[in-house]
Image (tube, rainbow, N blue to C red; front, side, top):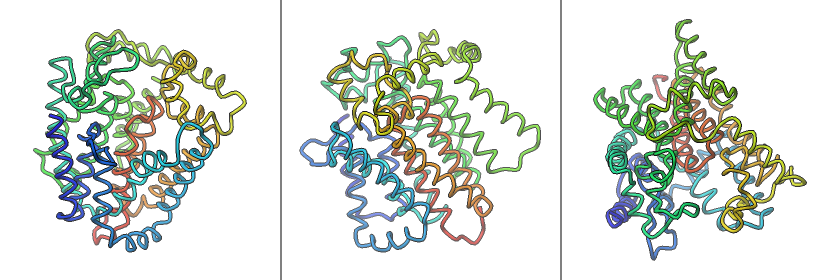
Length: 434
């Protein structure tokens, strides 16, 4: 299985030099959906997704001047990229736990710069057809491994790709972590079940928009809904369920002129979602309902009370370092080398918590500024490209809700790809507005 995954990665890298640009975009999505665990030994850039990105950039090297020229005409995008670049480099400069090389490789090239790759890789909405087609095939593969994971209670793909590695706390194979936990979760082809649920929710939004724009058939859309629903429900993460519902609601509210009753219903659902993370009584009742989707569950997991204790411990740890934090990579370093000293943080399960802990108020402000710039871009173009900006806002709301609820995990890279696609198709001056 590991050999097959490596071969698929290498074939995709070679195809980057042979196929049209929109198919290159589709292969980047393929990597984000199915190749996150693939490491290729003996290669300087071992990560499959990093290799795919390098292959994409090399195949487009002669067109880079045109890309930068095009980027200059999209000030919101380059402003966002400048913001995140400054934030990452400043974090590396002020931290003893990460190097400049690691920051450039993993924070910029492998994560945030993906919005630029995606922006360059597509042209208009029709060029999203290969992305929709390949992502549908990937959903089928993810669901196949997800069903096996659900039936056997072991993530075979994860175990095959991470053979010999064990969880630092439970000392079990990485594909069996959630089998041994109080609450079984389906991982499919991801290290974390939360990432599986997130990618299904994100791709569901893409296919929902593609179906409305008649970029794919009813049959393909129904298959996508079935596969995405399986992943969202069986990942066992209530934050994913709530984030998916919130993002779809945002998409509809932004895109369509809905009747008053429908709008009231969507607003009521959004209030319920926000109440879940705010009022313990609402959370308790919701947990009793959602337990029917998770095996061996007695509503264990994150709670409002746990979040409050995490905020308190973050404030204690960061005392005296409120503005710049304790340094990028602090949590991972201490979790590996001195677990007892950070046990009270309970995993800092929120991007806000981790950013405050490691990068302080300045880092959190830069993080918020990056996404606010992108949101402002969608708001500015709403009248001209209503459906496309609705898709962008839906993806943005999904990421924000997910990252605040569970932490970023592997959500940044696919989010940047999808946002890059949306921004480029908005910029394309088509004859018929969407």
